[in-house]
Length: 466
Image 1 (tube, helix red, strand yellow):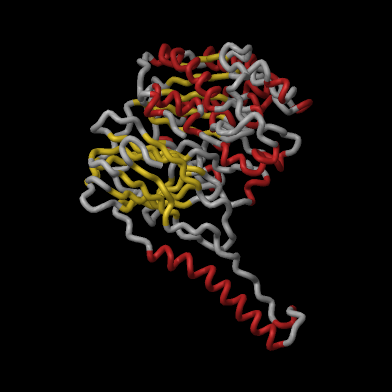
Image 2: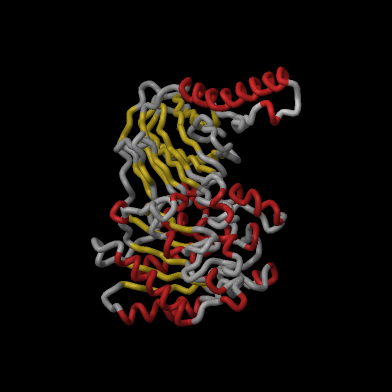
């Protein structure tokens, strides 16, 4: 695409199809053909396997070397990342982002090197020394990964016509596990690997400073931007099998709030997750048994329990919890008792405070609701306001037991005064960008009052993505 500052985005050096999977050769006895024919077949299969293993590596070696590696100190990261010994950065939680700042000559070509499966990235380019709006392009990863074969990295080229100072930001739009953590555990993780950048001649790297505020947002599907880019007319199979292509964390309420408050945002969210149990707990093979209380501890969701997050790396001013709906909806007789839910939710609040001992003034806000009056027509067993009395009670009990803690509760009505159900619903009964913006607009002044913050971060022209 090309815009006001004259930049284009396109993928280069990318295979349109992954190479074939190496085959297991069992020998002539399994061929059912003459020995000579079997030998020819075996040789052909061996050549195919060798090609599948070597060609991606040769392609990778033929790419121009990186000028700036992912571990360079000039880059600013938000969200949860793990840095590797080979100077790459890994992330799988939605809304994980990185930002670089550059001074570029005219007609520059900036190449981003990355890799992923079933994920989308938002590339946002903003010229800092001219009154131009940010421009955006969505970069799409490989749709699948072939076992045993490592495709070459994806190289995405950004062409900028005008000389100037630029901010380039990459945001992961999609979930860590598009098919969740039940059956989805057996699929390749939708993990982003960022390698670095190939810079043009004459480029100057400037240090990208972190934003002045920090927000952590912990939740489920609404918080991760599930179905934001979908339509209420989408067929079930579309969001069931390619729902990741309709997810857009950038337009979900957590990131909208981040832009309104000029804050870096760390999103820890997974569709169907709960506090005591996940959605459809009677069939744990769908969404897995660990809940967000366990997942909250992980640096990378898909790395397993051994992937422990270092909470000192991102210390927020405020943590917003948007959980509880999946504990009660779609559970029939398995809904938790008041005592069970209260204990787990209060335990989660305690976990959050315990992880940030350096912030005795940390604020935690429990949010509940944000449904529409029409959602029952789509799914009679999904009422986003059903758990709110339980969330409110547990939050108030925690506040009474720990009066030194700054804990608040915010209720987002489901009566149509916020989310109407008209033109603000995406696929699978979840909010689209308009619905998410309605929730953010409701929450923003209330959060500002609690935090003593002023509204008015980035202009909406800077915030609007594709």
